[in-house]
Image (cartoon, rainbow, N blue to C red; front, side, top):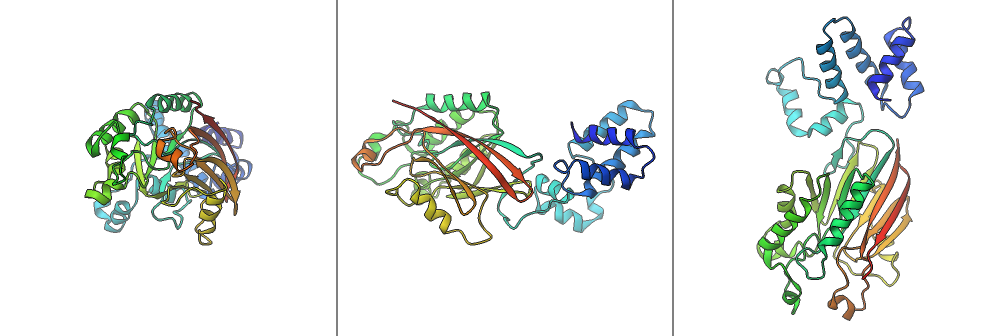
Length: 345
C-alpha cells in the first residue's frame, strides 16, 4: 500500500480524530513507512487541502506531485537568497532527504539514493577489463540479462572497467581495443545495452590513462551514459537514504594467500565511525563473502578470464558476477544474502 493510500484510509476510518492524532496513529502503526512524524503530518495536510476541491483533475495532479516528492514551491527562490544558496549546494535527492527529516550523513561525498522501504537488490560487477582479449562481452551481456530477470535496483561496478595501457612488456599484445579512444568507445557501446542505473569507480588499470596523459576514462564513460554515475577514484560511496552506506573499493594491493585475508585488512584500515554497512571490492578477481567488524563484504570476482600473465604469477580468476539482496533498518543493514553466478570455460 502506498503512502497516499495509507493516508486516505486513516482519514476515512478516523474522521473524528484531529490531524495530529491521525498522524501519530499512522506513524505508530506503520513504523517502516515514514522516517519522521512530521513527514506524516505534512502529507495529511496536503491531502486535506485537496479534499475541499471539486476539481478531480486538479486533485489527481496534486496527489501525483505529493507521491513523487515534486510539489512545487509556493514562492520564488530568487526572493529567498539563503534558500537559493542551499538549493545549489545539494542534489534534488539530498534536498528530498532533508525535507523528509532524514538529513545528510557525515559521508559528504556519498551519492545519495532516494530509498524507502527495507529491501534492495544489487547487481555486482568488477574487473571487466574492456579492451583485453581475455574479456568476453557475451558473458557481460548474460549478466545484464540475469540482472534484468531478477529485477535488480541498480548495478555496482567496483573498478577496472577498461584494460588500460601500461608499460608492462607484452601487455599491448593482449589488447583487442588499443588506446583510450577505442576502449572508451567500446565500453560506452557495451554499457549502453543496460538501461538501468549503474554506479562505477575506476581501478588501477583505468588510471593508467590518468598517469600517462591525465585522461579520466571511467568518468568520461559515465558522462556518455544517461543512467551511469561515477563515484570516484579507487573508492566511492552510495548513501541509501541516510540509513546505510555502500562503499565500492578497488585498491592497488595484491592477492593474499588466503582469499579472505585481503578483505580483513581493508576492513581493519577503516577508522571507527567511517565504516560502511556494505563493502564491495574489486581488483584481485576473487569472489568471496566475509563478515568483519559488522560489515557485509563481497569480493566481486571478475568478467575477465585468467590471462597468461595471471597464470604465470599463479593468480586464479573467479569469473562471474553477484546478485546481492540487502535488508536495511534504521541503523544500517540488518542482513544480506548474495548469490554468485560463475562462468566456466
